[in-house]
Image 1 (cartoon, helix red, strand yellow):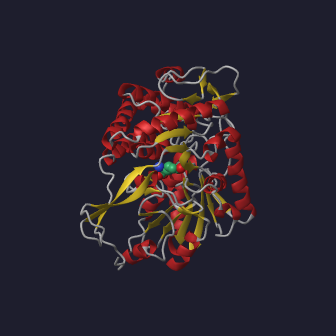
Image 2 (image 1 turned 90 degrees about the horizontal axis):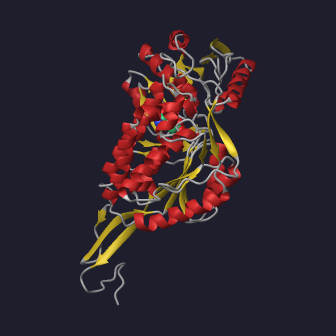
Image 3 (image 1 turned 180 degrees about the vertical axis):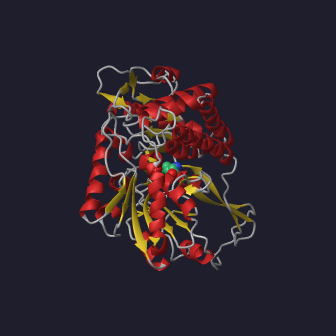
Length: 509
Ligand code: UN1
């Protein structure tokens, strides 16, 4: 448990806080603006208010970010990494406070909020290390006395648009890699979770001031989409990284793609399936499916939403899941022992109810949960629905809520067909102890997703791996592996050090 006022004080969040910041001492003023509320989804109370960023703020931010980048791009990458590491260090020092802010914004449990801040800290450490390893290949020239290699250079200004479900980690996954790559970063968070962005900007300001690297991280927090679209449409923004719904992702792609030379990186809707075959350890499967389904109140793009169970074990698995779902404590995340908090807002509760009603109307049976919980805040029951069919509208779409549909299969080929038969392609899983089944799932005719897990839940991607998915999920990759390359441009270099001009391609002059 924590005191909201102490948490706000820790990050100097004012009762009406500016929604734009160009760096240390660079918060915008608050007079004469649209003001919007930061609402705690756990009880509907207003924690603070934000003076929304305006067109004029955007003009100031892009100006600072563009100018700062001309200096930042020439800072040696390991020095850039030091700034990111310092932000990670400050986050570590403020871990409890940041976790409280994340919980106030999103309604996730303190345990999950701590885990999200932990992800940000890990990401900072990884990016700082990566800053020393922006490797390019060397190649063998066909010409005598020529050296050839590729090098990775900054893109320019990077815009990061993040969703409400991971208000800290998604910015970190993008922003830290962008920064070590020599880009300056404009962050446009979801206005549903403003406090986390305000707190993190305060830490960034401190780090930037200490190290005299101003303007690397800026904050742009408008309330409405028309102002937000300035960032997407601006040709001075070299890369727009967007995390959110497929519908908005398509819009971002269209706008950015209409001017060549700019890039987008999309991490859109998931609709993640987990196959459980007849050889699976069912207790393990039930545990990981349960956390995958109800963790973050089912509001992860990696949440497990479709369980594809072999007919022979389906009933037993459902029994285990039912028992697990019934043991989950739903409640205010500030209370000890609470595993599942509220949904983000009343609209999300409506989407939950709509999905359950659709499933029931088509012949599905709710075996656990299914209803909203009548109390202040946006609470729903973890919900398990059996008898689902692959083609149902609710099964084909992502609903950000703790709902799992159980689908039954006979052969593994059929399971994979059901699994891949949705428009999205983010995370996937198989529970099995049969090597051939596992390898089939991982083969070219297996899972079509960006992430494949074996005997694990679909959520909780390791930051060391590249994060993102295929199909309508958008194809982008953030976080680990070589995802840093997405924030840089490749240049193929060829140097003639021989003083002659030997022609290639069999041309003789
Ligand atoms: C998201 O839900 O948009 O691996 C991204 C996970 C989280 C996903 C974050 N890191 O489940």
